[in-house]
Length: 164
Image 1 (tube, rainbow, N blue to C red):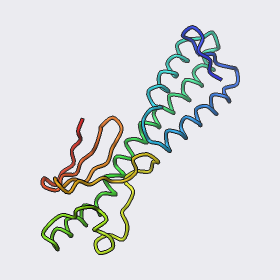
Image 2 (image 1 turned 180 degrees about the vertical axis):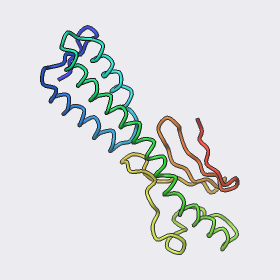
Image 3 (image 1 turned 135 degrees about the vertical axis):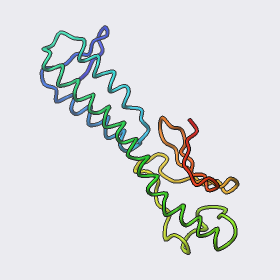
């Protein structure tokens, strides 16, 4: 297991413990989708690669493992933004259809069911912040995304923006 010892992370000859730790970290990140694992994993990769007295080849293997966790974390975040925007398309169309039929946007997304939508899709494939939000006063459809704050679809301008 990784042990922090005067700015070095001890790398054992068998990186299997690092594989287990990396798998657990990645599983946590993929289920939560918060982006909290990516940067620390990249830092661990750099510390492992640059420090220590172990063979360079072993350090390189372990550093590559944590670097992959970092890359996969950021890839997962980007994927979920694209997924949410794609899943928003039928919700946006249903809101526009509702407006055409009732001369107003719905007060809440539940008004779209079952006439305009059979169910409301989840925005993202995560346990946290997986649902779309909706504000009828503006009107906007939104979902949170790490490093971007919140993505908003503005019905008046027919466009996506973020609050970052």
